[in-house]
Amino acid sequence: MRRFAVKSLVAALLLCAVLFGNAALVYGAPVKGGVLKIAATITPTTFLFHQVRAVHEIAHASLVQETLMRYDEKGVPQPFLLEAVEGMPEQNIWRLKVRKGVKFHDGSDLNAEAVAWNLNIYKEKGIFSASFYAAMDRAEVVDEYTVDVHMNTWDSLFPYTLARSCLIASKQAFDTYGEDYLKTNPVGTGPFILKEYEPDVREFYVKNPNYWQGEPYLDGVEFIVYENELVMQGAMEIGELHGMVTSNYQLASDMARSRVGYTINGAAVPTSAYTLCFNMSDPTDPFADELVRRAVSYAINAEEIADALLYGYGVKSNQWCVPQSEFFNTELEGQPYNIQKAKQLLAEAGYPNGFKTILTTQSQTLLTDICQVIAEQLSDIGIEVEIRPILGAGYVNYIGGWEKGMLLHPMGMENGAASQISVTFVQGLDFALGVNSFIHPDDLHQMINQALVSDEATSVKMFRDIQKVIFDDYCFMKTIAIGPNIGIMRPEVKGHDWCKVQNAMHSFHTTYIEK
Image (cartoon, rainbow, N blue to C red; front, side):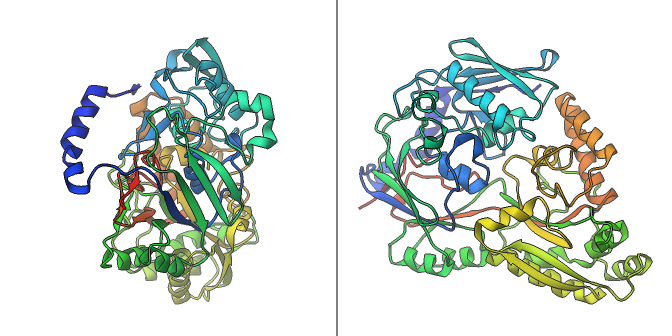
């Protein structure tokens, strides 16, 4: 079993000295003060720790409420608010060692009691209770800084949950003010404190002067909602904004060539798998027929789409991970582009002249552009596609079920392929991608559960096999490409690594603005 432990502080300091020792000679000493202004397309719907769901919500909320673990640049969870994590599969226990000396904004201590309380809330009523926390039974305090998480069945992926979906809130604040208060007034251990919140307009955070890693240089961070990315770009050019994040790869490519000299980071571990999903639960829908799903998959030239629309930022893949991942299955075929094969299969399914269908997606430039190309490609086999873009937060209502046809979904890969598979294709889920549109066969359900309780090497191999079942045997989906969120920052902003690991803002406490 992999042991997750804190790296040597001395080694880390030496590395920083080697990498950044001459930074002051280049940029000058870090400057205190100023407000970092970042463009956003949407604000979080809630800051209540156990109900924060979407990737962007977690990223924003983590400025205030930090997670127990964090991903490194290879996408592997590492301890953060914990000093170490030890798996004891023979006892069905994950043992957590809580970092000492960390305080919440209200002055209360981060200790075993606070961590166990948070975990038990996640299990009892968290939005991921039936998915990421499904195998958990309870968290118990062992001593002041040790927590044992008891599992009903072994979950080899639990550290991924602690990195993605485990924002830690103050128990004292909860007991004092109640749950409703924390929806808009989160109290955590982070470098910033939420001061003002106008949904779909702005968020304003002020620095936490008592932050456990040192007082931030910035006075604050402001997120301002923009509906148009070209307007964002203009605001960046004149200095009204310092930073923005985008999955519009053409825009990122254009800004990379700008004279402004932006810092542009794409995550080492790509953020989103642009996935075409088929509705197969309705027997009257053509996609209930496996032959139709295969035909459509063969008719789509995914490489052409990636080359045309991702501008070199994307990774070509036929499954839910990149080729360097340990979960990548080299034997998976994934229906490579073959128009003749597509026509043959469609005729076998009883649709020699095609049919009409709907393709639903989120109303974002890249997604609607991908849908447009898919529609053009499918017209070659007689399928007429109506594109249905969904605006803003309303899109969440379509993730679990899109009624008919297809859904193009930017599946978040921040939790790793195995973790995402295990909370999507098992039975009994309340909310998940395609919970009402996919079928959930017994054999796949059993394979996933067996992989979760196996030792690490066996689990990795099984999840490779599971990918083949999903993409080849059942053809539930087709991966178009995998791409990162792109973080773009003006050159006067220093000391950050924004979007080097997904779209996290982990370094904003060391970020400063040169005058």
